[in-house]
Length: 329
Image 1 (cartoon, rainbow, N blue to C red):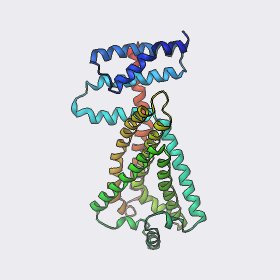
Image 2: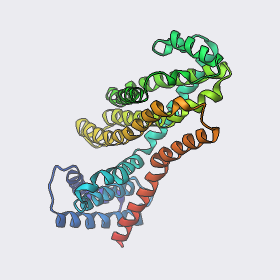
Image 3: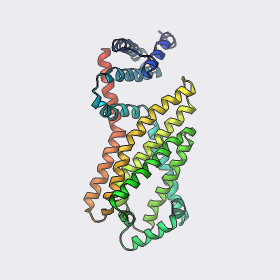
Image 4: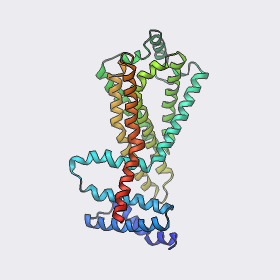
């Protein structure tokens, strides 16, 4: 059977399944199971005759979604939060993994712009951060005293942590919600924060304190900055849902994009909170603790968040696919 005819023959059925997944059409568990079996038959046919086709990719994704919907009813109430973080978010991250790559590429580019700007304009940092001139002067004095991270030692621990958490959540919300402007707003917000970070790091390098500053900044910075890039990813997904609706109406595409991106955005909140707690309670002691402990915290945080967003989605996707293939067989 030609692929075009195969699609034409089953298109209405697949669109109906999409509406079931979106909750527009209600089905009891028996009907859902029947739809699932029918769909996996179509997937098996597509895998056999059109293995490299977009149709096969589409059916595989549709099968994974309806599989989750069937087994969602079997979860206990107290397990919903666990399922959200352990299965739902990783599947969405896998689905939109290219947007995470784009976000990191833009982040790297903007960091480089910040570094180059600081190289060619010595006062660049002072004009890119709030209260820049006083902050720069204070930090220079701290560096001369051998305490490059002295700025993190002011204020109470809990007060600093709470203020930082709310500030970082606000930054993340801007990175995400500015995606409503076709993703351009998100890129602008990412540019502002990344250029600031790049020039900030070069500032310490220029004053010979990069190593000392990194010991403090990246204790909390790993979770904070990585979460920022993921939040930018969410904004790009939101923008793309408006600009590129594909087979959906623009409004329907936006609703789907908002639903999926918001779930991924929510997954960054625990990391942002952890970053604020580390900055408020731990960073102030960065230069007093052994270097080995600095490295354990920094690379431990990187391993955790990197695994969750880069590795674990592939593990979950493979697990779901194996369950689908077992059902097909």
